[in-house]
Length: 133
Image (cartoon, rainbow, N blue to C red):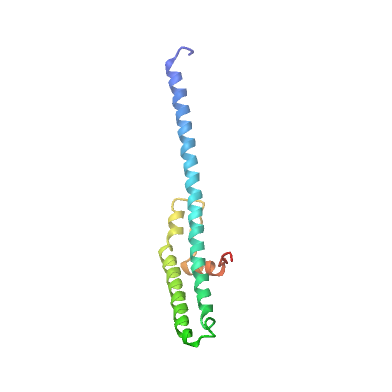
C-alpha cells in the first residue's frame, strides 16, 4: 500500500542490511589479502635465513688471507653467524609449521590433505630468493 509505513521500514532495513553485508564482505577480502601477504613474508623470511646461512658459510677461509693471525677468529665468527641463521630458519619453520592448517580451517575449497612439514621446508629451501645486491 502506498501509505503503509511498514513498507518503508522494510526497504530501509533491507538497504541497511545490504550496506552492512557489503562492508563485511570488503573486510573479509582485506583480511584474506593480509593473510596471503603474511604467508609470503613468512616464506621469504625462511628463505632469507637459509640464504644468509649459506653466505656466511662461504666466507669461511676466504677473508683475512693476508693476515693469518685473523683467519681463525674470522672463521669462527663466520661459522657462528651461519649457525645463528640456521637456528633462526629452523625456529621459523618450527613455529610456523601449523599456520597453513589454521588458515585452511573452515575453507571447503582447500584439499583435505596438506603437505607435511618436510615437503614445505624442502620447497622453501629450493625456492630461495636471492636478495638484491
